[in-house]
Length: 225
Image (tube, rainbow, N blue to C red; front, side):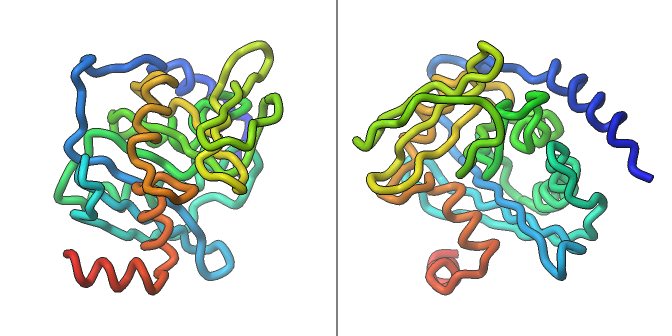
C-alpha cells in the first residue's frame, strides 16, 4: 500500500526548501545547459529518462545519457515527480559533464503543492533548474496574445507560480516556472536565449528527441559526437 498522505506531506516539506531566487551572481553565464525528459516504456513498467547537455552559447550537443529503471510508483495525480525522479537521477549519475543549469520537461513550482518534477529534481542535484511544461497543471491565466513572446502570469491562490509564454506562433504556449535556485525572470531569460525557432528550447527539444529516438536527432548525434 502506497502512503500517498506521507508523500504529499513530503512534497510540502520539500517545497519549503525550494530556492525561488537566483542562487548565482548577476554575471552568471552557464557553460553547459542540460535538458531533461522522462517517458515510460513497456506499459509503464519501465521509466526512461534522457538528459542532453548543450554548450552555451553555441547550443551544440556535447553529451547525452539515457537511463531506464523499473518504475517504482504507479501514476498518481499530483505525485508524478516521485515516479519520474529515479530515472532522472540514474541518467544524471551517468553524465561525465556537469551542467550549470537544467531545463526539465515538466512543472516546477507550478504544482498544487509547489513541487513538480523540476523542483524535486533540482533539490536532489542542487543545480539551478527550470520547469518547462506543455500544459497547465494548476492555476489560471488570461489569454496569451498570438504574437511571439507574448506572456501572461500563471496565478494560483493569489500567488504567481509561473509564466505562460508564446514560444512560437500558431503553437500552444509553454508553462514556465521556477524549478530551484532561480527566479522567474531569469528562468524566462534563459529559455528565451535557448530558442532556435522551435516551440521548445533547444535543451528540452534535444532531450525529447533523444528519448524518442527520432531519426533526425539520431543522425545528428552520430555526426556531431
